[in-house]
Image (cartoon, rainbow, N blue to C red):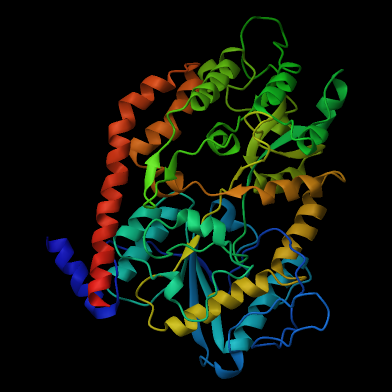
Length: 509
């Protein structure tokens, strides 16, 4: 009751905000004056950089891409728009920019976006990056909101951690209440935001401002070329025949006890190093939950498909198709030359530039050919806005312009996709088409995002894959039975807290 009263008092002062435990805020590092984010390319034409209000319609059939921020009427007099993020994971690369204008194409695009936004509405883009601890960032945001400070205007989140608690504690300002934000514009991902919308408001944003970090499967092209009968993986993907069975069949062709000593260790060859087991629920189109007619998440994981997926991973383990820590070896990665495939985030490929290795990029495979589409886990996270912001007008306009200019023709989004990915990371002409397929299939699973680290849900989506890979056990049915009650309690507790928080909002509004 005391916490509820404190929360109510905070709401009365500054709109709904979290009552966080006051802790010492760890010192941030790498504080600069810009943030950046990217996502795959589109071809929509961009207006001139000095445009503000809606542009005049063209006389031909082509639709002009234009935002609705009234820049001619806005001047926030150099007000700070402060983004807080963390230094590990996908946020570390191509997201934060430091220094002056650069000749590097990506840094130049980030700089141009900064100048375009700052000059359009008179704001100053700043950022703080906590290095490398995400928990430190969460503590800083909680501490700031808990005392009603307007320290941060945008928070870059992990794809799982603190997503639920930020909502139910009243930490977040609804994005659909921000002035100037058009969540239906094509530089926002309305479909994925709807997936993450669990209450009456939209608390998490996914737009062209963010840099996606899809889960992918890499393969060693030199190894594949030496094995007779090895299929063309790119063609399998294009023909929608890239499935779990296709992956397993190819992986078996390379798996070998090199010294024939009967002991499988780090000296042997494996079809799959660092298998993408945690991404299989998504790639196989097996959701953890689904929304019922009332929009509430309900468990839908207790299926024959889920059992088959875990049987497959256990078989990979027992047949030594994938590397396995239980056998005493660490995961083997592509540069060792001992694995044909490996699962990773796309950003991992940047580290491969220092190696002389010819690799290809593939989506994580489908369950079977009947699936007919590739679904890809996005390992980056959404962004949100603290409820303690003092100037929603400025925050909304800045977020809209950051998203708009990121997706403008030749902007950060195009640069990341066309220059960084198609150029620096690309290994062959098929890469752009594979990337198109991967980015088109990006997907956020709300159950994993909101509850992935909570024991009931964690024991359903992650623990069974750990058991299957490291112990060679496929006992999904029994694990589901053991955790179903606790998983449902996680969901019910969340909705109880969410409904209470939103009832307080309605009362005060």
